[in-house]
Length: 222
Picture 1 (cartoon, rainbow, N blue to C red):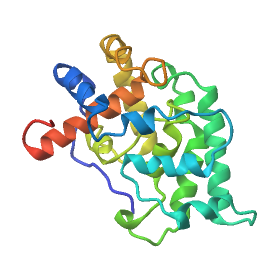
Picture 2: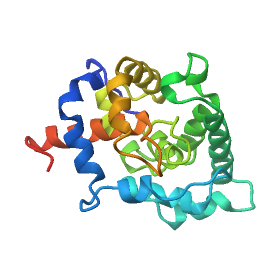
Picture 3: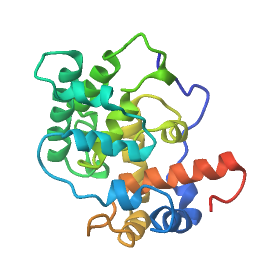
């Protein structure tokens, strides 16, 4: 069963504005041990998903092994090959959409992404959540690098927006980015990803994740 965030109120990225430069400086520092110089800066392509694309998501604290990746690319028709097909469809869908902050209510629903998430859950439905490999978190980390309109969803983002539902997170983040786009866009240009301003979805994820680390440690992140 998927976890919920009942009883909590969604937060806003506006709360993190004072710490934003510090968090982004730390995360993008090449001397640090964060994923910016690898996950974010590695070359991308406009084709279907590859095994290397899937494994790249391990740089965001996943633990995908050969048994989670190789079956995706089998010629047999299995749950895993259906998942890879669903991931490719979600990738095509997301690449055709504007940035998340510019998506309307129809676009933000992303039905192909919803199907990929549901297909991921179906790969092994009887495994408890915390022991599962393929979840909506995995899907988001695999797809975001190639299509930033797909926001990264992790435990910090779920807690921040007070929901475990991926579609609700997309809507809440879309609204949050819209409300804060001016100052976020100003920062994004100072931290380029492959020569272009960092996507606001990635700015939001970094700020939320870094703030979560600070909160859990009870002190400065760096």
